[in-house]
Image (cartoon, rainbow, N blue to C red):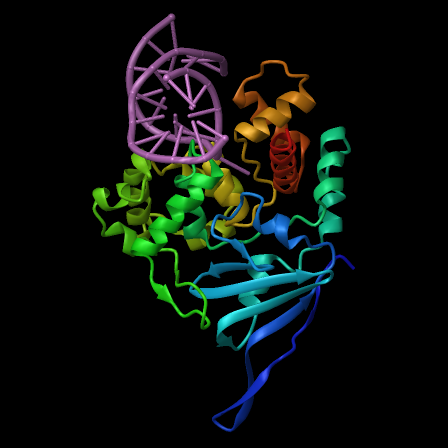
Length: 307
DNA sequence: GGCCAGGTGTGTT
DNA sequence: AACACACATGGC
């Protein structure tokens, strides 16, 4: 019901070693309860651009265009694809939003946020890109995070295939691509004091000191403890990586916006410490708290923007 | 021009 | 445990 069903269309057949294999640059997914625009533009991912009715972005090493009309998401890639599992995973198309929202607490703020932005989903992003992006996010506005990341990708990513007429696109630089850079080269991307943090994290991942792929298999507290070992990664950024990269739905990052929402709607604007807000939220919002957190974050940001 | 941004590290009570 | 302050850069 709330789970998406799939229709693949527009496939072309290519004869490969005697077998007909379906490979195409286009497909369509049928979706329910999916708000693509809110999902791609709610501050969990930083590289999607809206152009002529479509969302253009990069997933791993693939250039991707996404367009939603009602209950369909139309997909175009630059290169023919054998399968679309990577996209189902990224967009979390198999997730039942009903079941998640049913676990939310029933209070004013959550009701408002969900009624306004129902269909907002959490992505499952590549872990390194997620970790690096949120290391760069600290004490920065989202518009600026996007610019820093765009610059980092243009300068140090890999040039990707794109359809004719489209702007050049670059992969997010891999850990070893960044680990070999000088701090100066990163500061030139306007990331300031975050540059040494990014190099250290890239080095840890490239050398295997931090094994990102293992994190989703660990208990969340163990995974969090490993992320907290990194300089420049505190509780907030660690929880962003656990939530957006590792798929831990209970991770609940508390940033300035969520803090404001919690203080205003749950503590009558009383002064209350960040530590207390964190322990409150992890107990109160439950198993899918991270989803509720993203609704509150997006809702309050949009609310304040309409002043 | 001052305040603040999807924070964190360090140092002080 | 709770605070102050620095950190680099730019949007508003």
